[in-house]
Image 1 (cartoon, rainbow, N blue to C red):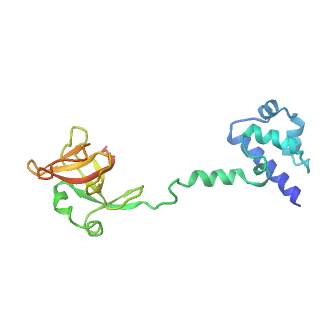
Image 2 (cartoon, rainbow, N blue to C red):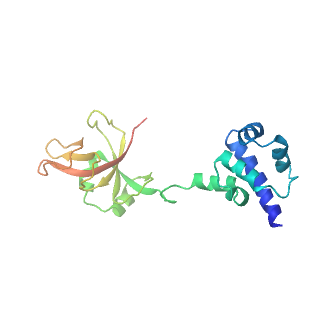
Length: 198
């Protein structure tokens, strides 16, 4: 029974690998040095005990482990791997969207409170203390009214661009410096993402 299961796995994997890698039975035979009859017999289930040297030639051609080609379902494995994020299965974070005109009075409020009184958007990434700033005027010639900036609130020493508020002109600016005059500017936070309107 075990041999039959391995042979069935091998057969299914060869069919899947040929299809998913854009190969043909002919290209497999030509590159691996196996005869078409050998490949045909495996795919038709006519061989119960496939020689190790044959399995090795097939697995080498596809660049997969020769142990795995008989025991692992490659189609299932690759489907799972392509649907799993490298960061794990993270849920998107709900982020309150604050209009530019309400931003400064909202900075000292907690995210939980802001989330109950403002509309929400979602941010995919590690998010702690994150807000969305909906621009109502142009910022730095790059961002227009209606653009949404996803910002991690507060001061940081990261090399990300920062959104700052000029206390005199009451306008927002994007700066790349880590240090700026706190008497003139109020730091909103690091810009994580820009979503352009339109």
